[in-house]
Image 1 (cartoon, rainbow, N blue to C red):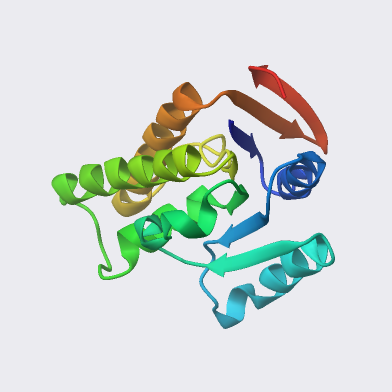
Image 2 (cartoon, rainbow, N blue to C red):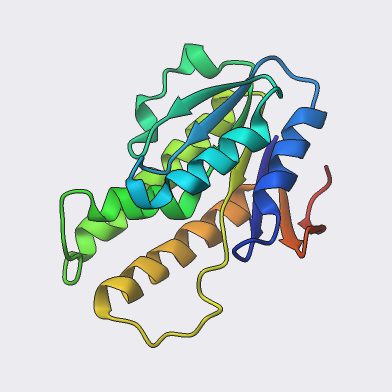
Length: 181
């Protein structure tokens, strides 16, 4: 089963997704962490680690290129992918300071991310992928940020369509948009 969990910043989507994984009866639990270890986000990383402490997660830290996750490592497992906005930013800006004018690179990156996530879904028993709502704040942004947001929207739409269930978490309340849990 492929479940996409979305919501605004600090909506409770990560906590909800972790609880959802823990409620599922399926093999081992794998947490794929996409946030890069930088001094400015260590507090958030440590908070997420403490949230899943004692819940039986094996953690794979991978900030880009999900295709490097070996199929035999995830077969039959329940995966929590946290999160798609970080993954996209890491992929787009890892070797570039600007993505403006690199439309082929952007579209190829988006397609690869979608395919890698769908591969995780088909290779595991369950995949719960956490994404977000980054576009509700308006569009008064620089060209690189606009390209990122448009690409992110494309990825979210594609994954929402491919998912078995889509859940939006609002103020820690899960709202099922599509499918059943």
